[in-house]
Amino acid sequence: MANPDPYSFCKVTAGDLDLLRTWHARPHVRAWWDSDDDETDDLTDPRVARWMVHHAGRPFAYMQDYDVHGWDGHHFANLPKGSRGIDQFIGEPDMVNIGHGTAFIRTRLRTLFAAGAPAVGTDPHPDNARAIAVYRKVGFVPAGPPQNTPWGLILPMVADRRPEPPQ
Image (cartoon, rainbow, N blue to C red):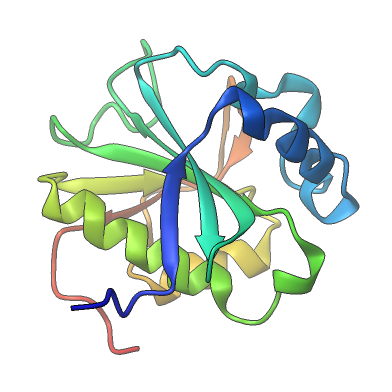
């Protein structure tokens, strides 16, 4: 039976780094993703799973999920053991604002919950209204006020394993 989901997630390899750098240079990515402190280059950190997101075979986005207990004092350290954090961006401008973010984040959440994650955290900038709206659509809720972290100003949001909201 064919997979009805048009999104696939392939592990980032050294061969993907030039494309990721190109995406990082784009204004719509730089607005919310600190390209000067690029974590996507370190492919050896076992705490972070890095993914190229494809739609119908075309790479168009980057996503990472990570162990929220992998850093001392992480803002999601209060989540249950096995919880993950996520970050992502759409690199291709023609794929922004047409529903792909909501769809591929929902797809990845299903995978993380099916693998046993009891909760997933994400931490958009409090001024990133588009990202916050997408996260709410897929089941995230704010988990406290905005806060400064070593990774910048964030709004902590959490989704736990429960039935999905209607699509």
